[in-house]
Length: 130
Image (cartoon, rainbow, N blue to C red; front, top):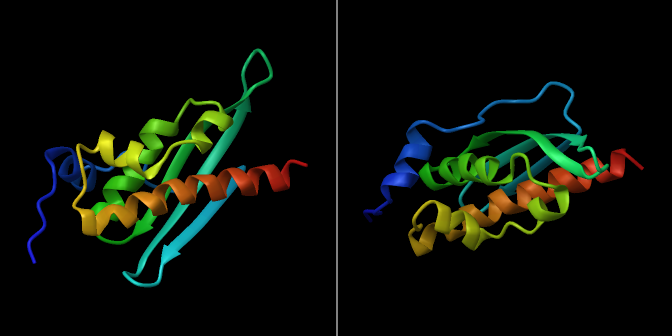
């Protein structure tokens, strides 16, 4: 089966942004899909702005997976970086797919993984910072 990926998906797959690990992250989200074998780790650093609002200062990812899994990981970091946590938590799979100019329907679950990974990282941060 041949999948047609948008130019933007291929750019993010071939030249992913924010790939890697953050030393001493404030939160880590680990998610995976047992059906396809994709595994995604999202690392975040949080800081406060002048009003005391928690902002995603840095975000990186490590993903073992297919073209779409790597592209969606790259894209979630680009969308979320610099945003307040409340805003970052609301990023949906459709937001990610739209930014990538579409994903084949059979690959939409990858964008779920990316948004779930970010939410898990934020949840981990909140648990640690209580």
